[in-house]
Image 1 (cartoon, rainbow, N blue to C red):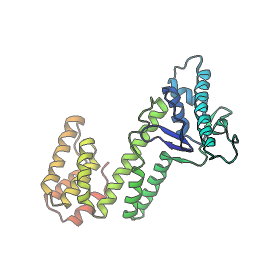
Image 2: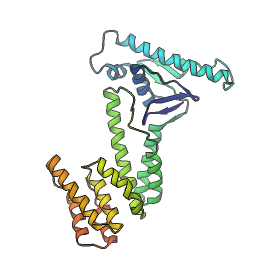
Image 3: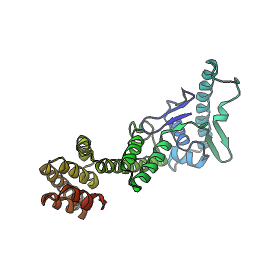
Image 4: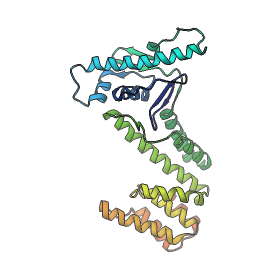
Length: 278
């Protein structure tokens, strides 16, 4: 089974889609797929679908959604058998893929792929490479992790409380991975290559201090000192106007160092990389 959640929902069993079109059934599949190979308790599914105000028929209705998913799984298995891809026709059934277990349901991935799990594993490996000082390796691993995303998590699913919470976690992890990947690229001298990307990111995340600091550093290293200072001024104005905050001490030191034309090697090590912006 191949599971895609970082963007539009797509779940395939041996290449055949088992993704329903009905909104509630999609929610059920998304939560089961997110926790593939683990039991998802019935109360968790009910909470996801009805957010604390379930109808009296909640359990029966949930069973109906499970039956709809099993129907799609059965169709996928039949298509596989028709094409001669099954060594023993009829051996595997929909109930082997979507299991009913005491207290809940389990979607059996059969050792397939999940973009969420792949993303999380690569982020951990990329962070470990950063800690070890392997900046080229970290940049490669984190870039690969970020490539798993094709849009916001569960982009076309009517998410309830659990999927929304997971979407927030994933987005925060994505931003941290992006931050680390840019830092790794700066460490290996890819400042000019980062300018176009950081221009877009600074516009999208208008109060994200670390991204703005990285943008300032990349501009400074590219011989564009005035533009680096302009980035600081825009951020300062935005923070004061929208949040009533001044830039952090780290960012203020970075700005002063650029004003004083501190040599680039000292600037990178002392004023930014070694002291992260919060």
